[in-house]
Image (spheres, rainbow, N blue to C red):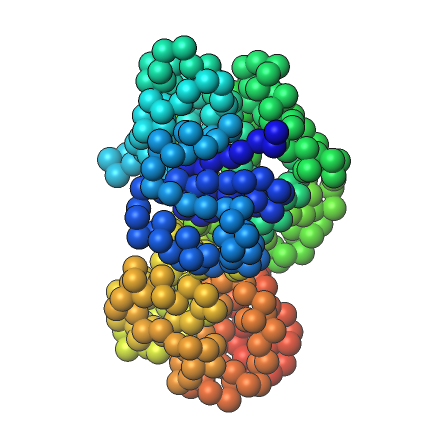
Length: 439
């Protein structure tokens, strides 16, 4: 009999995982405590932008292969494998991760589990969480039930989440028994049959894999941005530098794009939670370098504001600025800890009249920063501007015609916050072009 799956949590991770598991042929029941969200999802609609996901969700809701409920009891009765996909945001009172949603998911599901089943964590959690949750499961599950916990971290990139689920660059199973490994191998057989690498380890190591990977990527981004600071001080070109060192196979070119730095709902909060957990374990010195990684990342935003001030002859007050981009990265409408939106807000606080345009994130940006002005196109945002900032590297912005934009601005001054545009092309069209880390 084919495995039946439940997904606990119908946020970004949960909806993506549920829809993709349905695409692989499984019957999936997703659990969400927010009844309004359940109603929306049951109609095949999502409240965020992710390429290909809306189509996938609509198709499998229509087929009946994917359903939604607000009842943990219904989920427990339905599924053989239960995926925990709830959020782990940063706590408001410190750097550590808020695990209240994870704990609640286990507490609400466990009392209804009967017989043999596997609970699989996918949320990004501090190392040691799986061991604690195993004890919590055992304490709350009915007597005589046979419930085991495994960890299967996600490695989704916003904008590529569907592909990263259906054809990931690796799978990691953190298991405590051969039986759990067998279940996961069976479940992921359609993926493993593609030749996807598999690492089988214990749950503790599996937890560490995700936070270690994110910390390394954040470090690589901040490294090239530190080099960008040196390039600005010496007149060197950080893009040429990245190209040169990126040819070394030990280094690689990916994640060596200097600019505004990282943001979103994962890297910033994950490295901070990692530092907090190291402190709890008494090995805080092992991760003190991540404090500088975080600091370098934040400095890039302040540097962009400084460059904007310089380009405006030292006076931001009253300046009209067009900002292209609000999402933290292209192919997403996520504005959580967005460098682009942060810079726009800082400029407005200094007295600039800021108009923002993003192909997908205008609505979410306006909900977070309603005092900014928002436009329906790049040309509209730039109309009458004394300065234009390109802060999210959407393809639409990278393909803008310098002459078209130049015809509507008050002054042809451009700051490229992502080093994504061709300086010579823009300069040839009469623009003053500046970018982080480039002469």
